[in-house]
Image (cartoon, rainbow, N blue to C red; front, side, top):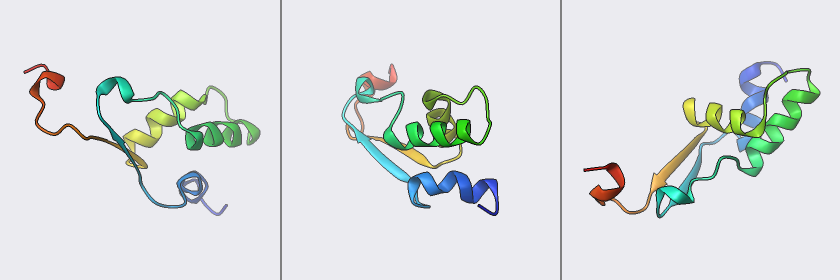
Length: 79
């Protein structure tokens, strides 16, 4: 793979995944890419890397971005 960076980004074809949603209840805990990442990391000997953990990592480092389609709906943000 050459680097951990190269290994990880292969699951998104080296681009950020944009996931549009209409409501917060549309947010999923996993996506097929996080499933594949988890499986590959386990194959490489990593432990405690389930798909939800991989999804959280992807969100944290900007590999995946969730965009709320209802822009300006203050009820969703508790205002």
